[in-house]
Each structure stands twice: as C-alpha cells, then as structure tokens.
Image 1 (tube, rainbow, N blue to C red):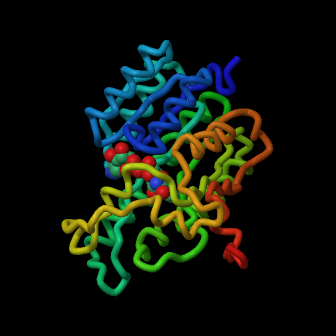
Image 2 (image 1 turned 120 degrees about the vertical axis):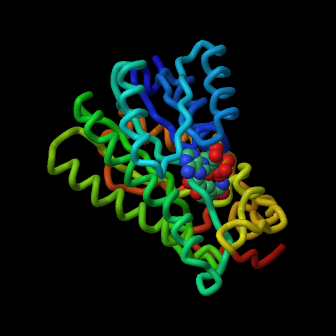
Length: 267
Ligand SMILES: NC(=O)c1ccc[n+]([C@@H]2O[C@H](COP(=O)([O-])OP(=O)(O)OC[C@H]3O[C@@H](n4cnc5c(N)ncnc54)[C@H](O)[C@@H]3O)[C@@H](O)[C@H]2O)c1
C-alpha cells in the first residue's frame, strides 16, 4: 500500500520544481492529484505524465491570488476525486530587492502570491477537509521564514508570515477537533527553476542575471544544493498518517543552514 493511498491532494504551483516533485511522489504513493498552476502547459503535461504512469491526476489552471477561482478548484477536487484530504500550498515567487528599494507594488506582488495565496488556499480547503473528516495542510515556507536574508526582505516577510499563520490555523483546527493538521516546510537552497526567474525590483519587471543555486550552496554546511525530490519526501511524510501527531510544526530541509555556521577549521 502507498503511504497516502486513497487520499486526494491539491498541489498549488505544481507545474514546476518542488510542487512537481510533490505531485509525482504523492501520486506514486497512491494519492489522487489536483495539480494547479498559472503554467497551464507545464501543469497539463505533468498531469498527463502521472496518468500515463498509472496514477490519477488532473490539472486546473489557477492563479492562487484569485479568490473567485478557489471554490471552483475545491469543487473540482470533490467532484472528480470525491473528497479532499491534503493541501500542499506550494506556489511561490521570490523578488531580489532590498527593502528600501522596493516599490509598494513589488511588496504587494510578493505577498499576494506567497501570503494571500496561502491564506486563500487554507480558507477554502478547510471546509472541504472537514467534510472529509480531517486532513493535512502542508505550507511551503522557507529557511527565509526562519532567519533573515539580505535582498529578500519582502520574501522573508511572506515566508515568516505563513510560518506563524500555519501555527495559528493549526490551533484553530485543534480546538475545532476537526482532524486537520497544519505544518510548514522550510527548504534551504534547492535546485529548481525558481533561481532562473528571480526578478529585481521595479515591480518585478527587470531580471537579474540567473542565480546558480550550486554556487550559493558553497555556503551551505553540507556543501551542496538540495533536490526537489528531497523536499517532496518531507511533504509526503507530513501528508501521510505517519505524521499524525504533528501539527503547528516546522520541517526544516536545508542541509544545515539554520543549524549555524559550518566553519571548516582545516581544509
Ligand atoms: N527552490 C528553493 O531553493 C526554495 C527554497 C525555499 C522555499 N522555496 C519555495 O518552494 C516553493 C516552490 O518553489 P520552486 O523552487 O519549486 O519554484 P518554481 O518556480 O520551480 O515553481 C513555482 C511554481 O509556482 C507557480 N506559480 C507562481 N505564481 C503563481 C500563482 N500566482 N498562482 C499559481 N501558481 C503560481 C509557478 O508557475 C511555478 O510552476 C515556493 O513557495 C518557494 O518560495 C523554494
């Protein structure tokens, strides 16, 4: 039996990187998937790949910041797959711009996707999970939600925001005794396409030269960038009943970044 056999999972931002790895792994472990993303071509291709491999997946085009779309996505999950058990609120963007250089429009765009999108996901998923008798919500935060990172002030604010939002909702669900658990995942430097997309300020229009995650990884204690599959393994654990006693908690998958400085005294 798969670790999430019989469960129905929505993965936002599921067309690429960490979200795509989560969708593949959850499907392989028996979940029925609803993949959503603004990237319709990538999302539809992934749903096709999973279906061809014998899994169950549909793709729905969705901008997570659009509240009107959320009831349609939840209704589709229930109509096509019968219920909703797992939400992986993963869609996110990062803007590389110092706080004092950031326009209000950039700030709002950063937070619209990373915070409003998570709030809307949770708000609309919880009633469906209650109809299913419980569930697991996994919110993709970051090490940038635990410690600061120069140039990523807006991103840090958004990722720190969802970290505490998750804890508050976890407590609300516990008090409601609804069987819904809410946890955050905090990846470090993970090799995904996000690093090629990171825009600078001025409303996110200008682009930096692409950032090489493997170059950044020299400052990671274990010395290498992580993979999307390594983050997905943590998400699978939180989605599954193996983590039944975890709620309001944080799963850090960062090669030691948040542990401290790994000074190599001798080379
Ligand atoms: N890659 C890393 O090093 C890293 C580290 C920590 C946290 N994260 C977080 O992990 C999550 C996934 O990132 P990734 O590295 O896989 O990036 P990615 O760019 O490969 O994937 C993100 C996906 O989200 C989608 N998306 C963006 N805006 C959206 C919107 N408004 N509505 C719906 N979908 C939208 C994109 O189209 C894309 O498919 C993000 O929340 C990111 O902040 C990534």
